[in-house]
Length: 77
Image (tube, rainbow, N blue to C red; front, side):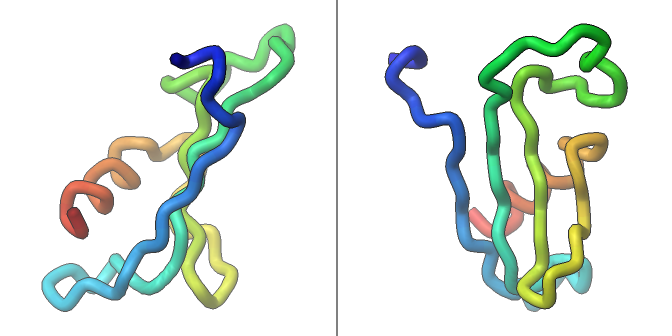
């Protein structure tokens, strides 16, 4: 199943009344297609990347903050 999965998925994030940090935007889950040397760095989910981009174009959380992005997913689910 994982071999047939796409290299990227996205989910729309609605504005959340209880949490001020959750605004309208999108969460992207991307997978690195090619292994790069020394790319482990600050990404604990390697080879996957989670990115939360607000509707105004601001990258609220990038690949170094997956825990915060997963907390947003939990809050809006």
